[in-house]
Length: 97
Image (cartoon, rainbow, N blue to C red; front, side, top):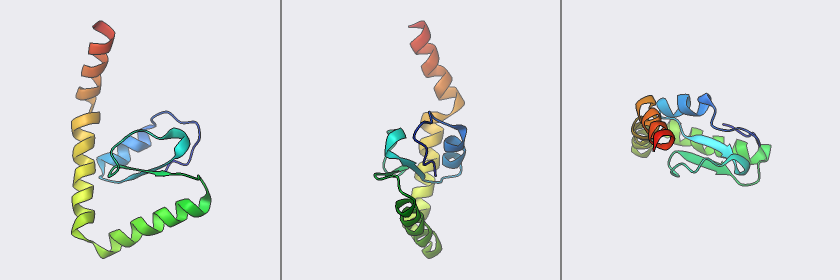
């Protein structure tokens, strides 16, 4: 969970995704990730974050197949879009293009 109004792309986001965890952030720092990866709080209130986390917890304790599939999709997205090799390659293209 990243309720901040002034972060860039902190490492905690990458670490969470590398473990297949969904990101919960505020509308102010929306990252533009796929909806199965990023859940954005619209009102940035403590109550809203608690409701979001409660829903996520319920999915986890039910251990639905959807939860397991989503976890793998998040991990795969991280590996295929945000790994060091991918980021360095994109930076090189932007800098030296």
